[in-house]
View 1: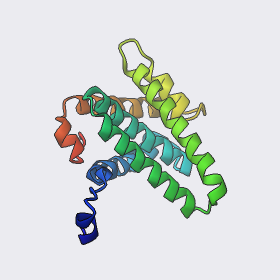
View 2 (view 1 turned 90 degrees about the vertical axis):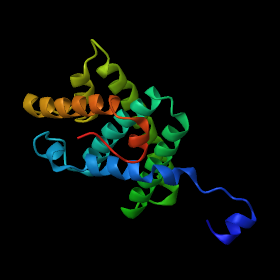
View 3 (view 1 turned 180 degrees about the horizontal axis):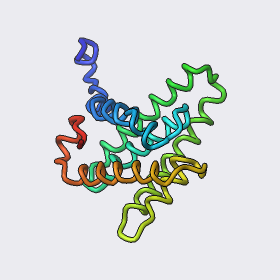
View 4 (view 1 turned 90 degrees about the horizontal axis):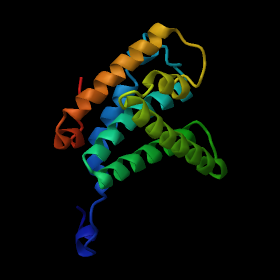
Amino acid sequence: MSLLDRLFHRQPDPRTTMQPLYQAIVHRGRAVHWYVEGAVPDTLDGRFDMIAAILSLVLLRLEQADLRHESVWLTELFVDDMEAQLRQIGIGDVIVGKHIGRMMSALGGRLSAYRDGLTPGGDFNAALRRNLYRGEPVANEAVADVEARLRSFAAGLEGLDPARLLAGELPA
């Protein structure tokens, strides 16, 4: 905490506590197997979709643990990162907001689709085809690979102590 922060009683940004978790999510979303065995398109959109899928499952776990503030902070880190990525590829100030709005809408849609897909009787495979592959044709084996890995990840999240999750630990 800096001298000015102490003098003016400023609190540190609570989002900084979520950085290890966010970095772990991005690292997991960039794993090569998603793009090779899982045939997720190795494009800007494909990487966004994969990170959004991992993030969605983590947000669902935070929701289950009733960690609303942490969920908001994690989502804000995602928005900040996506905005920085857009600026880095040359998207200007005027259009960045529109892109971010679409990304947040996409994240919300994925949260709902994956929540429904993972419920008993839900069709997680269809949710993945629609959101991760954007309806493009893909081999059944590739989707099955991604589905199995994400289901295993979601199950691992359920068994993970929330404090460990918040510290940035993700299940294998």
